[in-house]
Length: 387
Image (cartoon, rainbow, N blue to C red; front, side):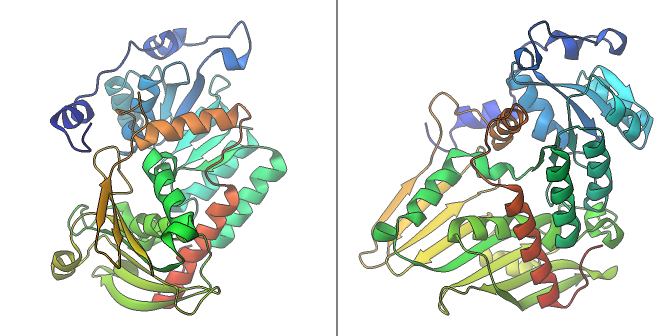
């Protein structure tokens, strides 16, 4: 099947879902269900803390595609009317008037948090205190110090917290990792480039531009290519320097567009360029293109992974032999799961982790290290860390 066939486009735009599980389709007052054969005999019951725009793609639709694994039973929002509208639209049985109410709900097994970055730490701590596992939207916290405190606390309390870097779980990412890790065939990596830029996708009053909520391009967009860099290069950066910076016109503490170069201890030749922007200048977009890219170069080969954040919609993996110029193009889907999104893979991994299975893709330490690399970039471009 081609990476962007008409059939794939249709199925992704107009997905068909199985019938809702009884617990999710029922009214709130009838939603209590006690499994007869223990917790693992029923879907994980998830509550959503915040009726965010990302929530349907991240957990609502995936849960409906894999109803044996997970079901969304509750939602809470700052505005109860918004929560009610969200619940009605997505057939969610229970509506809580406050975040605290949802966290205290004994029927909720685990919680998905898509709140603004600056609220992640506070509300995840509250979930941990109630022994509720958390699928936490990226970036996990406002800065590396907060991130380490959070995951140390979760470990001490024995509660699972998983940062929602959904792209890790897709087969194409694993394929790219395998290719570039084969030093005999691919060679030593000498250069990485990661691009994730846009210009007018979000309004000026969007939370992504709010410094007090830990907004900024490096936080919202940059966390992706920074995570690609760390994963595919397989080494943590030791320093960063500013290449470009465009601050958000309404708040000079917020990065509208940033380009940062990272260096590594293993070799002076090894460099990584990360480009990210919520307000990337159109002239820059014209030069680098609109597609998100991860470019990995060695002396032998150059690999270009197109659209790593959403490979289920479209992706291409191009490998060029630097000497001969021969190019191999491929895409990577798991047989029988061609319609699965990155979020579906992630939700399965989260449920499995809650049930005690090992997450083989990345660890809480990775979340801390990614946050450290973001802080390193903010220091390099001369802007304050998010607080």
